[in-house]
Image 1 (cartoon, rainbow, N blue to C red):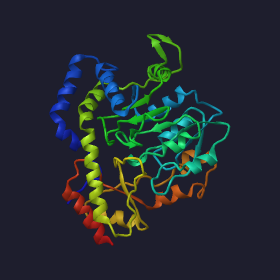
Image 2: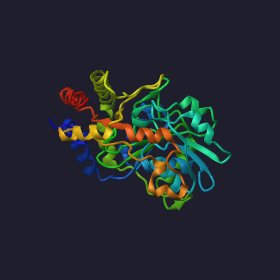
Image 3: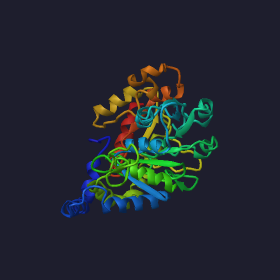
Length: 361
């Protein structure tokens, strides 16, 4: 049996008629940038995530960069984030000339460890970027106690909740990604920033379009970071299916957990008081590379998130970080094995993966 690790095309197949009709309507309408579909998507996502404002931008990475820029962060400032995630949060800090400060992660939930964050705060710390990794909410209440702006990286967790409220709207700003493999994925890049503060929303709307409020009057140093109508139209078709898709991911996660119980693997845990939407279902084990090869030999592809923590990436060698600086992140990176996870995954495919893993041990 062939089991792809990811399969973005499967959702298109299921929604083909609606998506093609939405795309054709945009092309026929002739309004391709920041038009009515973007406005409608912003309103719908804001409502779903419990935010007053949502500002569409052209990627999740730009969402993070513009969020920090809206807070006025720049050279001389420090921003704390996780060393175990995709590079986008650290990259956004670096691009603004601020200093990246990493804090180690919790070994069970893979999100920022508040105790480690406390050790890294200085007079120069201007914000914290907690990553809701793999669909698991970060411990927002503990992080709020530091009294610093929180820029929630919600790229992998749209629809997840913390203490009964949606993530992405509980900090000062929340950043979404609509990369095709995300739980709510476009047919290309796309992103969004959430906030409850009108002044920040106004600044972000200016920053995304060259710093203008009135055409050809540039009041801020801005970007060209606009969510286009085609992507917004496709996302509007997919948004009503997001909840069901997240629920299906939960069913698949439960099936994996039941089928793998009793094996020498550590299964994902959910932070008390939060929900997990399983953007990624990752297990931990000592023979990770052997199991990955075993699965590949039998038609199951898997990718490792993340094989090298950010503090050990070549592009940050000028910081002087070294192995052992963030031991939990390093240990997780050597033991983690994500398994195939998307709503269109069939029960028989899940059972096949389980069977292969059980045979391996």
